[in-house]
Image (cartoon, rainbow, N blue to C red):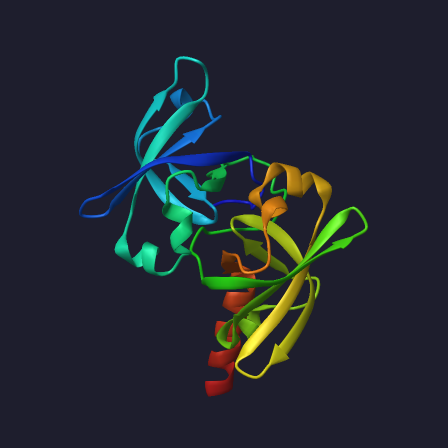
Length: 207
């Protein structure tokens, strides 16, 4: 489980196709404190550490295996050499829940359709499939590439839904969202509470 508060931006150092795809990520994390088998959210995708090490000059690296299923449900350019990933280690008992509850199970991919300045912030608009529309609401939570954000507005337009968020300067500097441009694609995870409420509503309707 995660909170959507990013603690490092990692860089993909190598990608190796095998049974699954082995991805090695350079990070500022002290990987001596990361156990093999631990979970790290990589731009919102919960992955398992299968290897790790430290660089002599500081910082470290870890390796994860990315399944075909994950590759098919996330932006392809996310798993290329040099790609930058928002990283968050799994939440521990007693940690502050600074964002919202994030599972690391991506629900879909959104397209960036609009980026504009809004004071010191950036207002970013996204397009998502209509099946995610019931889970998005103004002032609700959403996870974009692993970052916990507040939805500002939602607009349903036929078979698609548009929503917008504001990204403050601190979040721009500490995550990859500061470099997003129109045409980019990002991982989306809806609020887990919204998912359960939708499920409860469906069963209530059958009663």
